[in-house]
Length: 225
Ligand code: ADE
Figure 1 (cartoon, protein in one colour):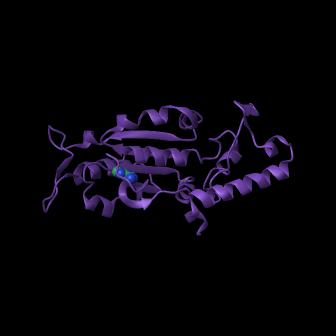
Figure 2 (cartoon, rainbow, N blue to C red; figure 1 turned 180 degrees about the vertical axis):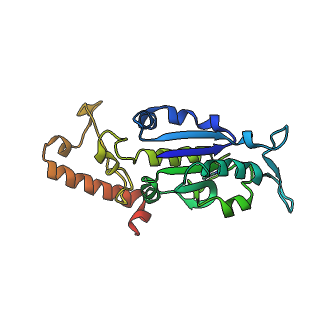
Figure 3 (tube, helix red, strand yellow; figure 1 turned 180 degrees about the horizontal axis):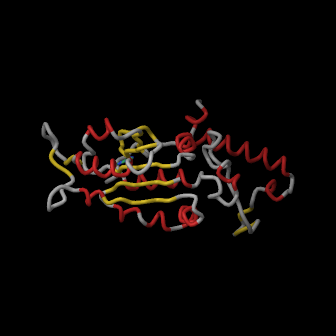
């Protein structure tokens, strides 16, 4: 998978792609992330990228020309399976969405700033509008990093244990059960006995029960209850 991110602040999200699983995915050649500085496409000697909103009101709007030039430059080089705009008014990102997009070859993510981007860009170049939750960030960069991370870890071969993405929270619409590691007793706190019993079917049943109980307690909406 190749992910291109168009942003006014690319330095804000360089580090998430230079560490851990996402870095390893790139080293293994399973993913590529390219950051593009929209300012380079700004207009005039001040490299202007934003302007006042027609009709008045507070806040600046990202101008169409730099976005068109940058995005069309990229779409001329390859076909994108998704041209995503990150915005609080987009569709809320979730695991089924990540699963669907995880086999895309080329993904372009455009990060919004200020009051957002000119609607004509959204109408003509954007194919997916995604929010990462019902709160407002100061820009779309962190949302882009979240989306890229969620997609990259699902690419086959990225995680060491291929089954571990399958047992994540949400993969079966349930939260993940509690997990423990050694020591079996720490400061008087004991690991549930079943987990050290060696009885695999009983452990699986316990995990399923715990996942259901946790989901019922914390996220009954996932159960449709
Ligand atoms: N930009 C600002 N807030 C955002 C959000 N919640 N999701 C995606 N992009 C955003």
